[in-house]
Length: 393
Image (cartoon, rainbow, N blue to C red; front, side):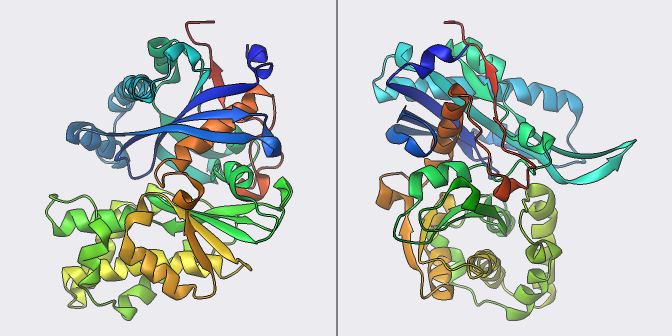
């Protein structure tokens, strides 16, 4: 099905990503020559689509186990498929490329449930993850072969299905001179450790804990829903960090787990955030103090994770990279680490994850494994992604 793409000098792939913050869809249009370590990556265009308030509300209803239901889940799978297809079409149009020149769409989908630690169900121990945004709808609406549902194969071989971006980090950022860390601060923060001149088996990665997720929930709480995030960290900057509140929540068991480990909204979603907020109020803290402490929780858990390794240079991306107060806190906690951003490498901070799934899809073309067992805990390297032929084939 994909053999003809292997013969091309390069492939143009649209990567689509909607992260745990569920604020919208990023599309990265990427030209890739070669594959694996020999890949040459060119970001042609980045496009961001913001979900309407109605769609956000429906997605967040799926995150709430008391409000979610099977009919809503089924409907949202197809609705998001339509939205992802429209985003791909609009991104291609704005890039100026003819739609016929696009070889593949790589869609991560929207994670609505992530349960990577095995639990007993009947006779079996089961781990699971669920991303929605129906790939067949994307392929039909665009006419372009679509690769989707990347995480489930890794879980089927004993991995946690996350993080998957480290494979792309290895291709994009491995240095012959420095030990590097690549930090993505989305709803959840994750770090990729890239030793100098790393082989794929040298790469380590894991979720450090909350990125923007808890911060955003606190902002929604204190603004009565008027705000969805703390722009530049301006609200948190007005507060005073409570060491007592911080230490209490740093004792959460996730932070003491050893890699491989991954997490999500099931652990650090609204219930966690509201528990933190109410505890802060019981200590007599102002809203600004609570938000400053929450932001520090993200910074400290990131810094503690990075300090375990001999990292000389840290490359930061994701929506959290725009929170200047958060970045200042991370820099202060890592004084001996040189801090850079994805944009120093020509990649918009919000474009990297969508770009990463385009890179993963390119490996599927070559029948080449694209997971990182040291990151996910998988028992072996496998090819991630389900292929849905487009109307042109």
